[in-house]
Length: 326
Image 1 (cartoon, rainbow, N blue to C red):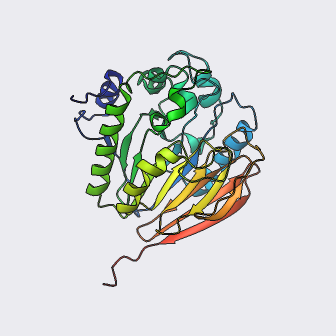
Image 2: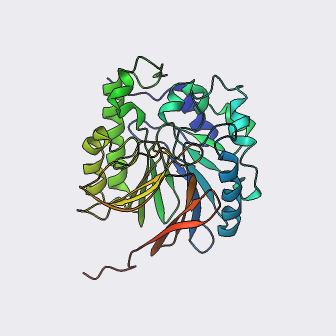
Image 3: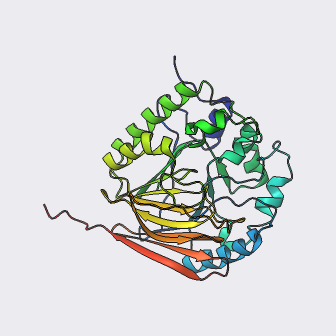
């Protein structure tokens, strides 16, 4: 059975001046700064009409964004609580996004993916290009690739991987464009792996909503460990970035350079439960609100976590030599 992209995604692709191609993830280009560097913020699990310190986090994002002269913002999903948006004219979009992230430095493109709470609403509306007419910063697709010169970003739709959502009778999920699930996931994994193998970028960053490894409320995600981890490690992915758990955390893989980074602290946090983790190395964990910044050059990537007061609470640097020693 051939895979055809949903009509709303095809329309979105046309607006972004590209033609949809079967068997490939949509691909978009963005130029780094004149010196080849890149700077951006990452936030997840935020959309609560400014409540649960969302507005305070947004204020600090604006100040850090100005200081770092950011190029864009990444959202790791669960953009609108509790049940996504009801349609393209739902005021929640303005109340939780446009009216909150008002700082001048945040008037940049936001590259967003869907979380499980977004799937509880009208997922097609959240993916609709009509929202871009309301706020030009908004860019949301299920899965896509962003090429920036020194780095390739692979955004992957993780919610359909999770078995629980397909037997969850308490909530309704918008699976239009996903069903039949098996075909959707098989195509997604095939295209995702192919794109990673073809990438020649210095840095490979994968962004999904659900954590692969986590010591927070939701813990590890077995479905992603099974389906994604082998692909990530085989293709030398540097970092997997996610939300879903409302915290900030940095976990290092014991058997590869791959890092698992959680930035899902955009609003409601402080859940207070921590799970033991014996299989990987927990470098940092913070159970409160905040966000992260990432600065990249050809040879260095530095990420930092900030709390709701804008304090830098964790910083880490990765280095790659320009030329191999072999």
